[in-house]
Length: 224
Length: 224
DNA sequence: TTGACAGACTTACAACGTAAGTTTATCATA
DNA sequence: TATGATAAACTTACGTTGTAAGTCTGTCAA
Image 1 (cartoon, rainbow over the protein chains, first blue to last red):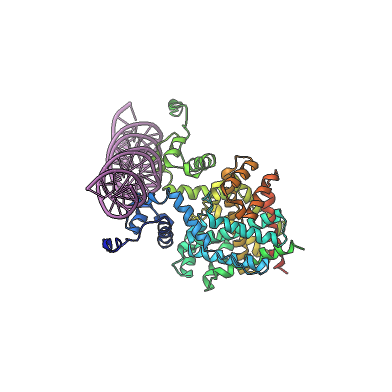
Image 2: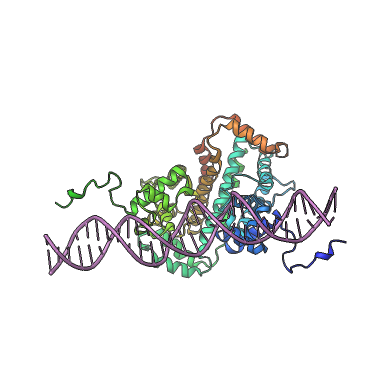
């Protein structure tokens, strides 16, 4: 009975503000305009609210960043099928890479977060559990985890780096490079840039899986 | 003749300000107090100068960060002996890891820099050249480079993450973890933390070389 | 009807990077 | 020795950031 009376006060943003809504808006703002454009005022604007109102639902900006990371990590697929450890690891690594590709700011943020939310903890536990149950010792499991995730995050950041000029043609990049750099001092770098300009398609996933295969094969060899 | 008269005006900071001196001070400030404490005013303070005076020698703060990265990269040892590619790669990777350990902020900064200084370009060229001359195709060389450096940077960032609580004993960390986290929900994570609390020594280099060996061995296999 | 309270709002501040303009020290030339 | 150009320091000021502090308002139980 009391509900319908105060409907439609304002056409927009009448669903109540919640921590969840704040975090989701923060993620999409960062996705669209980059992490630098994520300011409290801008985020408030997007939610139809003043910046300070956000503090009723989150502790501070760090809390927002933590929450965003947990959302991102929760998007990583952790296979629950009874597949072997190698396939499971491959799937979650590929999934992580694609998640970081969707949220480019996340790979650059992951280390600055000291506190982990539930999704991140579950992720840790799943990876370690999969490795331990595959027969890896505690020490090797720890190191394998470190190796895999160092690669995943590091790869994400390198892509981030390259995609700065991502909206121009490869040929243009090469030309720009040759103009800016004394190419004869760096013959191999020159070769690489010019060649990459020639080859039309750069396949990010294939690049990632190249390294992933080497790592997984190497780990497998340790089990014998 | 005119020189000695105006000596000893002020006891400190009478050597002239230069870009070199600014960058070096910035590196040591970041080393000592963390990258967040690197502000123009703080940096000026350390050099006995107002913040705005720095702009006579650097373009802006981004320019400083670029310059800092180039200093750091120049500290990475690139073996010039005629050793085989694998040994050369191993040495430079280990050197890079120790450099990033000395300058923890650097691994977190490397991707935000879009423009590369001469040291970084030389580094690129050396790595690519070493791989190409070892017989790797252009494509594999590019991917091997990406794999190695993703790992190196990613590893550095994970260490950064862990060292936040680096000044407390492992037992304390474990205890703190068990208090903060519902450990029975995360049995493998629990196992790992508690076990790491038991084992006294955590050897960062050994951890790094574990992954490095897997990567180098895997690359070697591609040459046959 | 009231009065408590959650959740919005406004105001204000310190710290940041840096644009703009001003002062001062150095040094070649008259 | 005097002058005047130039480099490099300085002061001031502005817009943007996160957020502390305090105020207003709409909802709902008593």
